[in-house]
Length: 551
Ligand SMILES: [Zn+2]
View 1 (cartoon, rainbow, N blue to C red):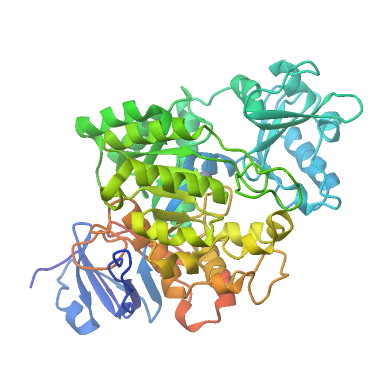
View 2 (view 1 turned 90 degrees about the vertical axis):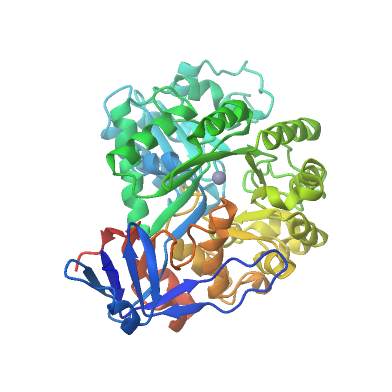
């Protein structure tokens, strides 16, 4: 018997199984006690007795003492640098009222020298009494020399203070740009500081870019977070706004390549580029840069609409609380089709953000026309796929379109969604059950930093659908819950399938990459509601332990 580098014994190891082909029912998942690892891959999976035979004099042994282990989590939708950056920025999402919001910004301003920007934020005015949008007048007095541009948590609205507006040249006389809105005071017409979507561009242009050192430190901070959370692979949706030395997508690739060659890239990246840059991406791919086990390119991402929180997701019927208003498509259908067609013809995988039901319908139609009878082989993706008309689940399945979804968004948006779009549409919102029952390939992720990176929160959300306001203890639209096994599969092999890597990772099986996590409890034997309180205690990437909880 060959001697291996590492054996892991005495576990309750959930191995998962091959992702079922669309339309096929999944078999029940198998558990193993032990695994053997060599050259970064699993070489054997089985009982303690079987695996012990692989041990030699130099074999490292990890005794799991009965704990649950499973394949490393694969997050199918993150904005990694953006999330990493957030960790050092002001945090506003949990502020309970306007005064606390002001105070948090005042505290941050005190730590910065004059002229340094306050960025980040992720505020959510729906947590405040009155739910009014913030204004620059709430923060001007505490930031006289500090330009501020803080973002709503959904990324579609920003609050700039007076100094930032002045530096950016935005005044009462600035017209609303296409695709954006400058919110103005009802009586004076003065900008309140809230800038929607593209209206923030003049401010973003003047925010100083980081140097390479800062960019690298940011990535390192994010990787540390991923190790703690047991996230061993991610699909990086770059940034809707770049944040790199040259403000370009290639900066990220350059940094990741270096991280890989220097051996500190502890999470595998599948990097999607902006669909507008499909030509450069296609060129990189044909030059053989499409990938290693740690870094792959070859996909593009675009936007079909905005978000329901900022009322820019695009529906067939009007918003329930805003008669005559249907949301906003991001670009004209024919333009979307032509760019999808070009990217697809260049051999790139296409992933499009679509949240409202109309945006989803449009993307399914475009994918059907572009892919023709071979659509399923393309593995087209719809990112979010939050609101879908019942008749369209079958279409997703028929075309093999991957629903790349983020369970945590459901328990967050579930607090107010029904007021905005009514009950009928809510029943097929975040409709994981309907997707799986129809045979749609489902991939789970977080949209970090829009939601926390911790996968166990998403798993908990998927199996309970308890909203964050605790108002739905039995689950909001509970018929759309999924089982624990289904949630774990979507978060591992479902995401692997979404990046054409189901043969390399996503389950624990011989020859697959040895990416595995050990959990603080056996998720299968605790009440579903406790999943959110558990944690990852060990993370292994390619057979190397990259994180281990201190004991
Ligand atoms: Zn996103």
